Amino acid sequence: MVIKVKDVMATDVVTIDGGAPLLDALKLMMERGVKSLVIPPRSDSDAFGILTFTDIAKKVLPGDERLEMLNVYDIMTKPCLCVFGEWNIRYAAKMLTDMSISRAIVSDGKTLQGIVSLFDIVKSLSEKISR
Image (tube, rainbow, N blue to C red; front, side, top):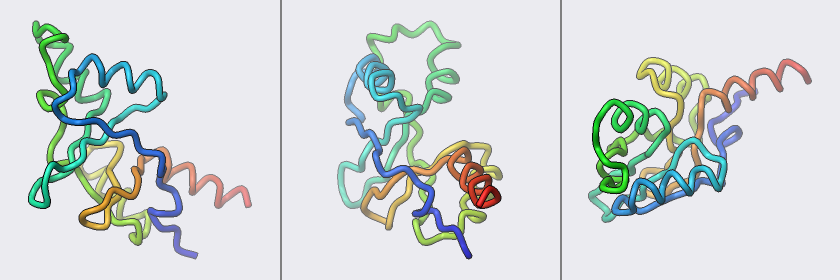
């Protein structure tokens, strides 16, 4: 049986506007217990963005920037990797590992459907073995 991305993705995705203050984003991440926030596109010709703890660690911690002066847009990764829910998880895993990232949003091209991480993919394999 083929395990698809839609079978292992998380559907309770937390989103935030790119113009929101970074401190609000951090607070939301802590309150909701998530490691990333998705930034929806602003128009049909725009792309999804993502804000992760890694983005913050790489782009904020090394600098002398004042956190209260930064917005999500200043730090987020855009465009972010999008995968399709119908894909076999091995293709998503290959893309994630080849690009050295831990998560991707799941979209049908326009609509946000979920988010998938390497953890989700590996966990699904361990569940398959234990059946």
